[in-house]
Image (cartoon, rainbow over all chains, first blue to last red; front, side, top):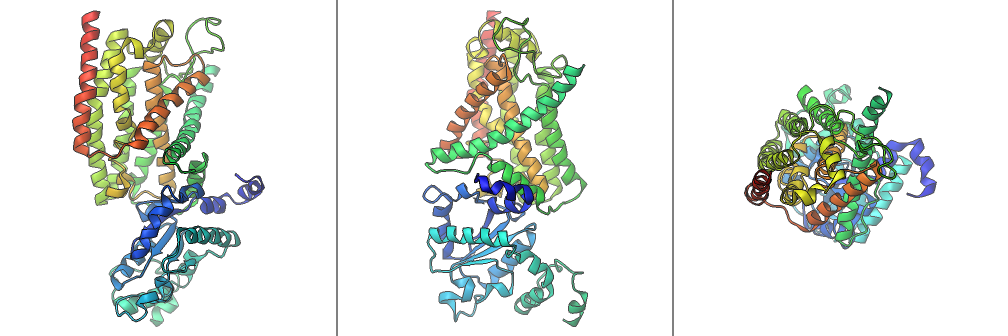
Length: 190
Length: 309
């Protein structure tokens, strides 16, 4: 451990532990997932930064969406995101979740992921190299340090708007709102 | 009385510290075998702090009680296992101290056999309350695996008990310190116990219970946040118990805590080296393996012991 970080650890252990223990839920939506095995195995070894792949959303705090998001997977993404415990961070990987990428005129994919769930960081590229993942992670550390990786707070605050966007696509989502009592006035206006 | 209270506190503390250390070491050792740099040794501590501060989702009282029972059962088991020290008069060994085992006079091996089943059953209880299909598969695998290793384990224990003529672990340890280690006097039982060690601990090749790639980490699938933190610590303490029992029964315990922990580390390293290079077996293969080689060896040891008495 870096000696200079000891003061930070004593001051805010929860935030520092969140920073250095990113357990990632990889959502294999598209071709982007092919870059993840090299990242977490021998060649690039993400585990030295405390990043580990976990199998269930209950255990993770980093949500990586790797590749294009079709309408069908978006529903699963929303469910998975809502199952993860706070605090949680979302990173969109590749250019498809940013603006549609090569699927910019597809009838069946989402062009802007952050309309439906909050995204804390983006890794641009088609495909991003594993090095780009590490740069993304170090940027995420900086954001956590500055308190700007607040996607889960934004989701709770603007839940009505996110839910409205989700329902515009799917009609009835099939499950009750995650934060029903947060903003009753907006809920009523919808 | 005061020594007893100190021992009652000290044993679980040693178990917890060493358990977390072993969890970190196992990740580091596996990483080095994969030619990776690996996480820092204190990574499990960071993980546990992170999990403790996360919001956790509960599925009812039984879901929470299962975690508490599992950890409590493991910590109670530690009290029955000698963690180094000797009953010999002072001065017979250099750097020796009194036996560190708060409940050495009661129960012995029979109690340990029962208590070691307590934490798997508690986890099964808690995971069952979550009503997740993956958890149900994990629980059924856990029970089958327990069935697989309990048969050779009981035969090994029986062979040792009939060889030394006692059920007290403290007595067995002091007999080994006087003469030969168990690994030389009951060699086949020692081999059988080492073969089922990965199954008892739940590491590769017998990590069928928690298989993350197949059944999304099995019984732990719905556990997150502070429940998962406690279960992580529990799995470490369970690892500690199994290896400590192996050292006590076959490697003569230790005249003090330091030698005991060094022997434990040697056994742990051997088990990790095996587990790091092997793939996962299927549950029926695990059952078949446990009921042939370890059971056969333990049975042979028992026959030899009974005939030679």
